[in-house]
Image 1: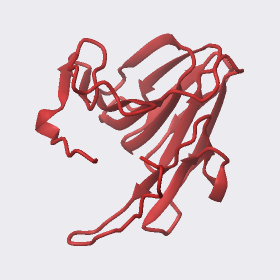
Image 2: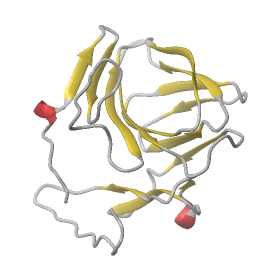
Image 3: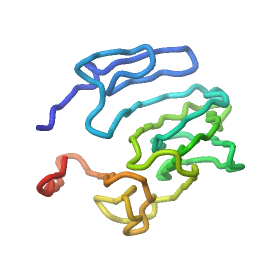
Length: 183
């Protein structure tokens, strides 16, 4: 059953440079009723102050999706990848057997507003890899961003999930039928 959790009920933290909202327990925010959903472990909504960010840190065996709502985020990692992610672009970092990276607000004047989603992979300790794709010029109401086989030019994830972006206007509806045995 889908449970609606209002924004005001989510966990939050304010570190001065980072303003975060947590859908599930994360960092210092802990709520035993919200520990994730199946393989989904994190949906964080972050606002990072200009020029600030996360210094180099490591991840292992996690699929990490970054979706930019506004502003821009600069990414550098131990694979040698360096990029800036803009609104309409999605990054997928498969941490595999270990990756180190940093993320900083690319702007010196405006906030970057982003979602970060962590999903447990279906296989552990493989080589890490990085993907980034621009979806902003796709003229569809419901866009497949991430899938296990990269269908419809989506980013390829190491888990049996599909992540979509739905874009609706005021008073507009969208129907999606969840297949049997799906969640």
